[in-house]
Image (cartoon, rainbow, N blue to C red; front, side):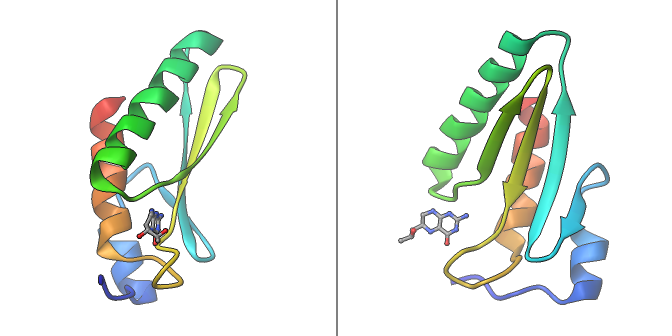
Length: 91
Ligand SMILES: C[C@H](O)[C@H](O)[C@H]1CNC2=NC(N)=NC(=O)C2=N1
């Protein structure tokens, strides 16, 4: 079970394009068209299932919002940071 990161660790460790929002880190990815966003969300889901750590994924028009938190720990852990980096690699 991963341990919760401190406020300072979150700021230091979160990938550049991610923001902290309470107990979550979040990034909104933008796309040229809606279906590219849908395809991206599906790939994110594949990685999440592979790692068994699941984000909230909100598919909008030409954008996809991804939110990560560690539910069992009740906040942000290094698993969330690692998953954010994995999702950025999918992009
Ligand atoms: C029982 C628990 O839901 C599972 O162990 C996994 C599933 N996916 C998960 N995803 C996330 N984001 N946090 C979790 O704590 C988590 N737990």
